[in-house]
Length: 397
Image (cartoon, rainbow, N blue to C red):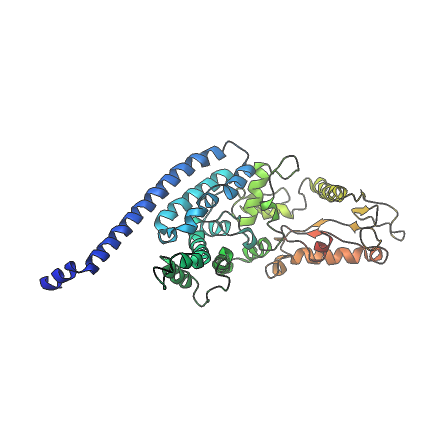
């Protein structure tokens, strides 16, 4: 630009406007950086305190009280999504805190899965970089009509700042998808991003990982992650049980590779213990599962007994339990609990294609075994693999 042109541009109002906008952007960037740094410092102190309580309680607090819950207002009211460099520092702190609490090590795929919502097979501990854009878009669209009414005397074509850029950023991250119909809801903007990430996790992976992802993505697989951890109600997991459950869900190493007493090699994922013929405590765990069902029925005033005798007079079969009063249509409830392994070699071909395939097959086998009971009374047979529940048994809930 020539000197005359430069002088003419500087003397115009456009130069002052552009300069002011640049200054404001620089101030915004400095303000966001200062805010993120102060937030990181505060969350570091809080994260260290979480190590003083039980791991399950710490996970619950981290998920529902810290990070995203604390930042929701700022994420919805400011273009913080446009400063991913600063938000990445918060995500790194979140990852480090989660690893310290759970005593696990995340690689890139497992961390991406852990940051997904529970309904997509994750832990529900969301990344700030993943939530920032959907949060801003939903809030901006929800408040746009109110903003328009307030500013209608000043401008008829007013739009919330950075809304267009946010829309374009969302479209760029979801090529081929149109804008959601319910623009006022954060889930409408967030679900396509989560589905895309879940599809990436499913691509070009071993059959064992595919079976795991199919299982953890089923509806019942993540209910335990949303349960309030209370020792009084029996929903508080000890640290080691929590670590194993999380590791099985995310596919991270559980143990050091070694040889099992039965002669098979145990990998770092520890799947062999789920179907080992010499696994200890199998009968006690089966009894504990049936006792949970019996106590659940008792909590709704339905008395039940375990392993009733005299029901089948031809071969003396005994189911795991039976209610003493009618459950449905004047007939008693009979159940038989079975826990099969998603990762067993005999099940992998089916479980890698359909969630709950192993449980569904076990349920069919149980119904065939107790087919004489089905003619006499209502029978719900509970079958469950590592995470997914058989489809017919869900009707008893």
